[in-house]
Length: 69
Image (tube, rainbow, N blue to C red; front, side):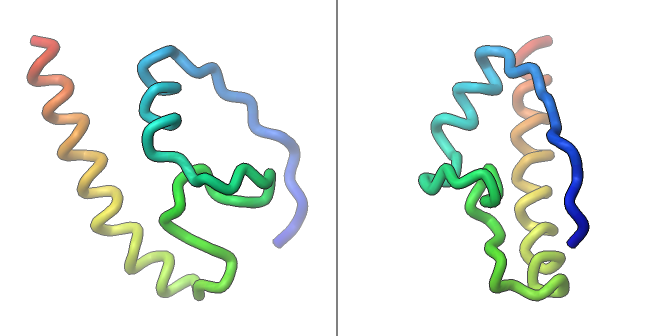
């Protein structure tokens, strides 16, 4: 993997609360924010895991937007 520049993100309190609740306990800068993947996984395994993970996120967003109506 080629080195990339830093990514800056503004965290609103609600997003920070989600990250604090579900984040990876190992805060090393090279780790993923959420412990869904690790460096030992192949690209295919990461893809296979991303599908249900993204589905859960979409369901959560739908619930959030419904409750905000």
